[in-house]
Length: 295
Ligand SMILES: [Zn+2]
Image (cartoon, rainbow, N blue to C red; front, side, top):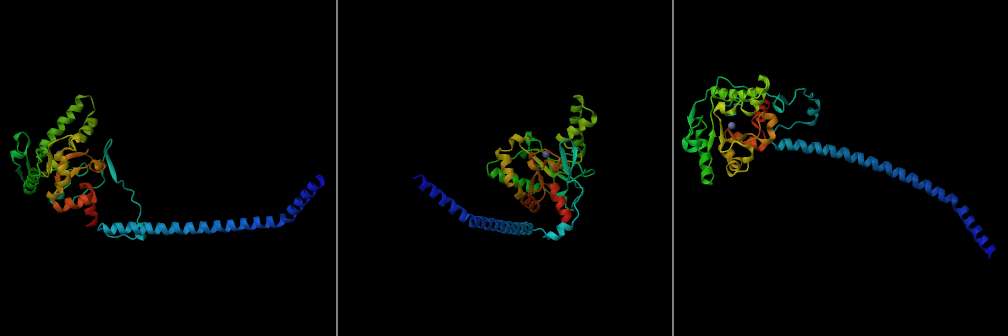
């Protein structure tokens, strides 16, 4: 019995020894095959990645074309030097404005902000009518805007929404008074003149930097952000464009306008501009800059 098992062991060992060489050769071949396959796989992946990058570049240039803008070849983009100009400039702590100075030749797009201060501008204004204003006051607006404004208020009325103007044109001198009063509040609280002006300027527009000084803006119904979902402000958001008005200080554009989100402040820009601005999701600063660079 013992002998038999020894024989089996021997045979097994012999078998093992005899087959050791081919086993080693097969392993070597497998390893080489795996390495070759790996090299092919890496080469194919790299090729696909390059291809997908080209495809992506093509898609993005198509998007530019579909937006109605001039297509720019990727070659030109590479040649363009990187601009060192900052996109926005910080006016006071936490408040920035789009880094652009200039105007386009269209009274409806006149832009007032901390970098584009408008002085010596007195529009011809007309009364809106006390029936459309708070407390029976009659605010005024640039007379060229009057018809579209009344059309808008009437359309809202027909939809069961009462738009009430709570502020409109403010002359440079009345803006000055408002601003000085605010500055005084902070001076009284012990702030330095500079700091008091900085804070006041984020709440009341610095004279010459407000749409209200241009006679092109109306504040409606509520002057606080948490009223953004009231039927009046929602109606305006959805319909103002049809009458040539846009929300002048949107939520996501505070760094460009330098003014906090004001869902109640509507600014006249004319119907065709309002439509394009909304389509492109541009605030007035971006739009005026865009028109200046593309004209
Ligand atoms: Zn306003």
